[in-house]
Image: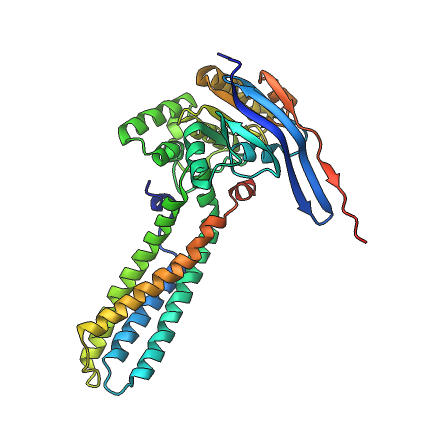
Amino acid sequence: MNSDKPILRVERLTKIFETDFGKISLFNSLCAEVAEGEFAAITGPTGVGKTTLVNIIAGLEKPTQGSVSVLGKDMTTMDDDSLTEFRGQSMGVVFQGSQLLTNLNIFQNVELPLVIQGIDESERKRRTQEVVDFFGLTQKSSICPATLSVGERRKVAIARALVAEPTLLLMDEPTGGLDTSAVNILTPLLRGIHYLHKGTILMATNSLSVARIASREIPIMRPRFLMTCQL
Amino acid sequence: MNASRYLFASFTRSEALAATEIVVSTAAAVILGSSLSISWFSLALSAGGLFLGVFLVVMFVVSLEMSSKRREVAILRALGAKKSSLLRAFLLRIAHLAVGGCVLGVAIGYCTAMLTAECSLLSSEIIGFAVTVSLLSSFGGGAVAARKLSYLKIGEILRQ
């Protein structure tokens, strides 16, 4: 399944944030590659910029320096509309807080990427039902996300990211904020997703036990504080 | 993609306020325009004031809508929805308010003018003028506020 062709290439990536106390530099010229079919984990403690890196790869934030190429396309130079279209077609993103639409039920939330892509209704319903069944959400498909547990909401978010069969699946802390039993349910599911999805997965996590399910780790260095002197 | 379905459920109080403002301004313009005792200068000044009110109220209400829906907008954008389809959803919402407000405003203004002896200059031109300016000021206010959509920082919103 794993070929050496890189799906994702990060070159000399740096993101600088300005704070009241000076500048903070994240990644410090990070270079990384993720091959097709690979399951890689971005690891590091809280605050090193894992979410920022996922956002930059997804094209939701711009880096200060460096470039990110997904499927050979430079995400840092694409215009907003092309980037949005490319993200919708080639990437699935699981956000840290699940980020489900509360006015839609579970089925409609999972179906959303296919609606945005303009897939016809019968095909859309069939594909959504398949994913909903795989995640064991069939019984709850007509209820609203507010009534679900955090773990179940996370499952819905992963199902939504997978429904359009993306080439690259990005997951930001898929087990973050979950109790041990929920993590124990979700971890084998993530392994199963990699086996069945056959695409490339990049997961950000600060849990070493969750990172172990990935085939490779990409550790993020601690941020540097760039002090500014005021005369 | 019909983004309206994913952004809006029922009409909010602030939207009701905007609709009321459109109704009152359109009705007032029809009544003033058909009045015998008002000069052109006073009419222009009154109509200008009324429709400036519509512009500002619609702009404020759409800004409020944008602020309350920023999370939903960010999710849809992150999933691949284009800015143009979301903008269309907001403009469609303004169209509902503006058209509904104009129809009701013209009806109220027309009935009032018919019942008032002093309002004998009522004509289709006056109604047309009131409707055109009302629609233009509604869409103007809405479009100015809807520009905010371009400046939303999706990454930051989804992090909150």
